[in-house]
Image (tube, rainbow, N blue to C red; front, side):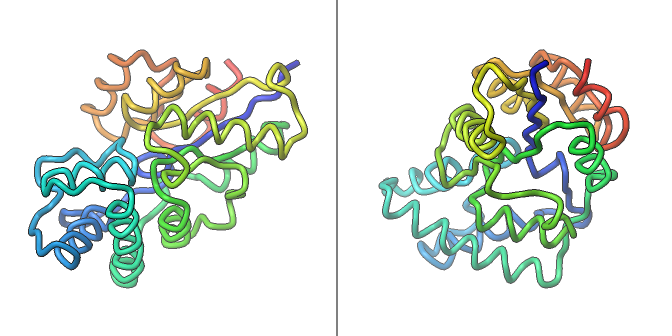
Length: 229
């Protein structure tokens, strides 16, 4: 029987922020663009949810006509440093019993990894803020620093998980867990099952319209059971 390999998105899936908007990620992006380009409210009109860090940086810089790779790397570096500072006073929290879900999945023989649009350094900062850094093995993941398209990030994550588990492509059954239509589409692009985490009615509608195989409210028993359907 193929081994389930479950790839988790981060924002809105395993961690979230409660407080006045904008959240820490958007705040850090705006501050990075202000410092580098004196650009105020750089993320205004840009949907951050479901995006990847490099793609978001490209979208902001394109407004200035300067979207080259070096500029993107400068924005990402500044963003990570601002995120570190923001998270000193504004913290993330887990979405449900994330640690318990990960432990249960591993206990049942599943592989667990990450497939997130966050660059690796940003992902670690967010996981640490939410108290989840020890729950995930970052060597079994794909990140926004690996690629811009989310489907490519999922593909990279799957390859790393297979290598770490010592399994071939036919020996695993890939499951992607995320909170937006982008996660569902990325799952479909690599032939994976898609489980949506909907913390709001609007998110549930979006995930259903995108064709998620299952939709849950948070990380808990319902999510674990959906992996083995």
